[in-house]
Length: 259
Image (tube, rainbow, N blue to C red; front, top):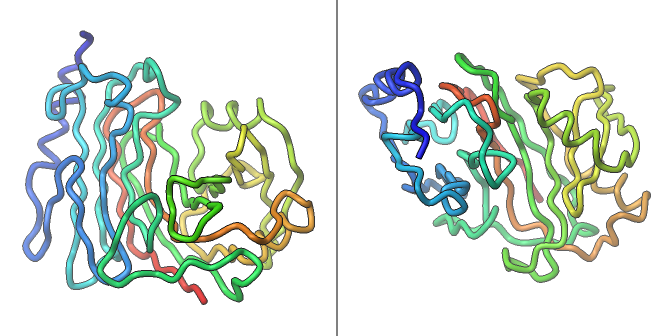
């Protein structure tokens, strides 16, 4: 089994301790507060079971309970090779409501797409280290309320997009260009049931507000969505991508407004 270079693993020293008044979450260890959750999911290891946490890779999330989800630090260290059986190594993320089976102590009411009056997320993030990751803000739409196993569509905004991801999106179907209310233009690509929304200028979007309800209306106008699909929750985090290395993302702010 191929191990990560020593130089990569040496960077783990940057993620072995947490500041006072914080909690360091290890691989697959959840943290809940209100309607929000933090969880590091290295799901590629289900496809490559020989990968060992702390030897081949390392994922940690540092949370600040008094301001959570604001101030969260996501650390990711992965081999520089591409995953053998998946496009990315995993998804280390914050989530709101039932994103993909999460059950926070303060539940979020599922709503059909046509019944959502307001849905947006305000965010600010920064990163250091390897740029080989997706900053993905996404959600699933399901056939039944609150049933993460009944997925119909995956819809994701890419706020940091490496070349490998841009190439993957470009190989799919181009749905069109979407201009949000701030004037930013996004290109919308489809790969299977995954709708990938990427800034048309190719640049990072490290702070701002994404208004999701208008996008859902746009997708209904395109007859991609019927409006009967269910929204249950969403997530904001990093997908370590081919190229690997050590990435540290600080989520200074992430809040969802939904009604």
